[in-house]
Image 1: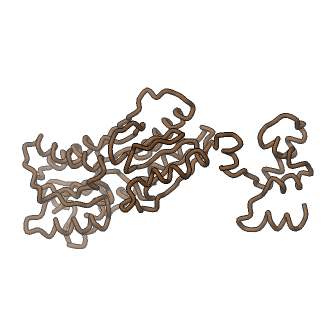
Image 2: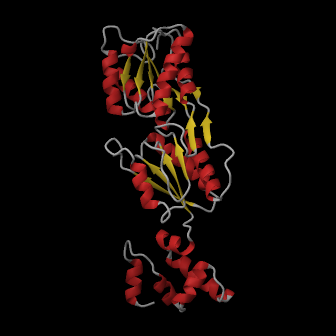
Image 3: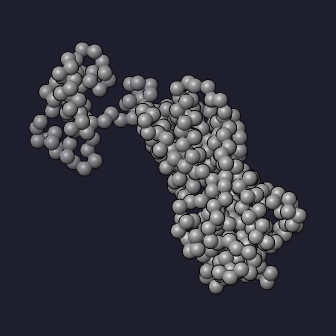
Length: 347
């Protein structure tokens, strides 16, 4: 291999080309192409030799070229609004599920700009579907009426069930479990830091909060419900509003762990003992919840399992299989830690 080729291969970011592989192996470009595509007309000895050179140089065809050549990329895309705790855990489950399927995984983020751009998933699907990926998982999409030349599965969609296959956790039952826990401890002034009003899972969690009160015969004080929007800064403001009241709640149920941890921070700032004077329950069971001081009691939704199930459904769709169940709802459970106690209990 000549010096120019060596410099190009070793240059940071330089892509190894098919021409370089051919020159290094001492064969024609057409022979390299046959080896890459598994075509006839190459001896086993030449095939092994060229394959060794490909591996040594780190040659890889681009996804677009692979798509044009084979009509398949063997890549699955996971499209997220932003890389926040929930989507990150879903991605981990997707990564676990992709092993041994023959597919690769690529994550594509909208950069958190979805508040101004509802419908982001339509635009990003048009960029990647059919040329970069064979199918896609949409995590908390704002719309689910997307139509593309490839299979799509939605995880926790804003609008709930649709014509798309969906995977979601049981937010309604999870909220009831979390609030029931506080009611059973004896709390009667239970506030809620609510989620994003446009997201069906947030709506279901508020409904579960109300249903738990109704089942216990405890009236709901609507002034104790403050918007947190699944956002840490907004949740901190909501918690300050609640905890600075002349008649503050004895407990807070937050629509997600990010909001619950924000409320815990505010309680600490205000010198309010948790759980002695205030109990807090979150929703999600993100890894940070177990590391809080004190560790957060929360409702666990199986975030990694959401990603795992979505990938399993998508691989089946790509293979042309019929899905026995197109709308999957996974169970939620209570994880008791140290942010809950009876009202007025010593810490």
